[in-house]
Length: 270
Image 1 (cartoon, rainbow, N blue to C red):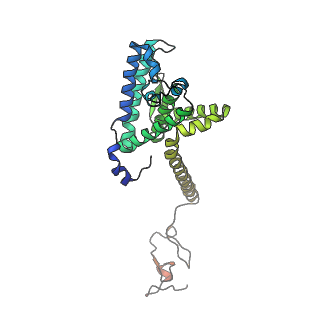
Image 2 (tube, rainbow, N blue to C red):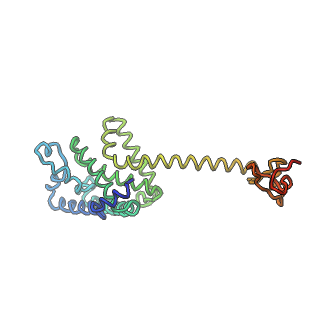
């Protein structure tokens, strides 16, 4: 996430060290609260009915609703286990982003992502939508910065994070193909990530092309023989013809061997 260093210093007071960690920990508290009092779950959900009643605080409360439902389809125990894994991974994301970006930029990324989610939920109050897209925005940022980090899929199979991110992005794209309106929804939800990542990816693409071009040029030179640095403009001899041959650059800017230079360093025809 590109941020001018002057602005970063000016708004450093807005930095929240460990912001992602704090959000996840509060979600764990809400998870426990819902386990004790299941009826409290409705207070953290964004619903059309709630917004119509003027309960706009729901547009902020959803941030603290856990991504894993306490009473999921696999039972409470599995929900607790999933929550533990998600919490550990979220802590990894938090520490890694703050290490790469710093606390100010990471905080601004989270703030801007949450604002985009709130805008979407103001028009499409769908329960669970905000948490899913919020975590995806954090996940995509981590995958872009650390593409070769590996996760153990099913605790056995090591998979690089860029592969998981690509699969997730492909899933969003396929959903949007079936429901075109989702293109707009996903674009706004992930706007901070797109603003930061697209220029970065374009820069990477240019670098890869330049490196590939240099590699091809180098391979062609290798196939054509040894790389030569000197060549006499008159006799066309090089250091490959005689390793002991000395070369000088004449006033005309061309290179000559000593056999074709006079004492004043000017070219001397054969």
